[in-house]
Image 1 (cartoon, helix red, strand yellow):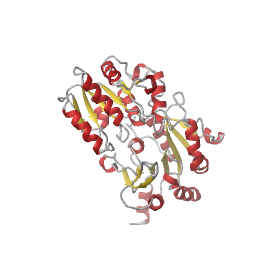
Image 2: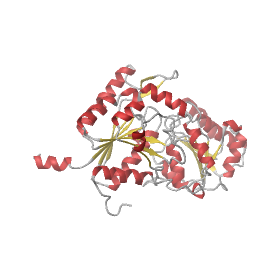
Image 3: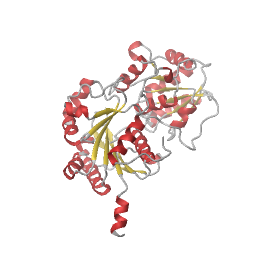
Image 4: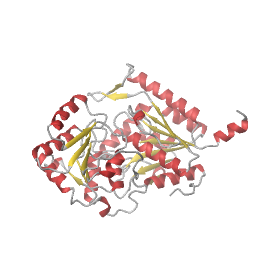
Length: 403
């Protein structure tokens, strides 16, 4: 390849996403949505996602977007971490991941780096790459935060322990919050400098669109989704109990367990589903959840960020059963959304985690207002705001014909 050919290849702007993904699907799905929006706005841009998600290979990625799977880690019952498959100590697997991240950064040579949620990465694995990028002045580095992280006091203690505030101040050029300050400010309890706060912008939530080629049932259904499923057994049990309690409950439910639901627990649920005479249909995983969302009459879900964005995007009445452990994130989001009239929540503190309450909630979906009835300015502007800002950083203009 000649020097001119090399220059032409390198002239293509590059965006690198880091998504630690030790558990669940949220970080990967958020990074995939952002990468797709940026590359759609400017098709010359290439995006690469570094992810620890064990199911990354089961997703389709947009044009000009690819991913590298980092060796997986998993959380043990005592709250510690261990290697998912390699039999390495947690220190060894973290060092391996850090080396792969560092090498990828140096070879991919990105113009923008967008880090999801963890300023230092998993157990500090991102620090060597961040130091190199800052020393070489190689890229514009962005910290991306979802709308809610956790209870402010708990979050402040966690970030202090990780040195996350210092890392954010030292390495990051700006911060994007994928939500609205009027709904929740995830940085409110963190002791950021005024300088960092002036570099923080609230983008709005990330709109989702129906994907091509997805199959949707023709009969009316309520979609039941615990997200990744790893902590969704309680919600699934409540839905199945409702259909067991009321033989006339309709419409039928389409239950997507998620890839991380325990096999033993799933087997117990499958036995119960089999006795419901087709009133509940269950599948393990669907990488095109957007299509199932769009086709549903209503939704019963936990309160994860991505599900919340999808509910708003497809304007579906939803009942949220938020988890409260190990983080209050979902409860905080659902409570505020209920106050605004965007969703209905079943609240443990109100004694609503009962089959009777779930029966009433599912029946009520037919008359429940859609989220759009509660107008919130800028609610779903996130992908446009992010892609416009990325193009501004890269010195590009939005491609003609791209809204």
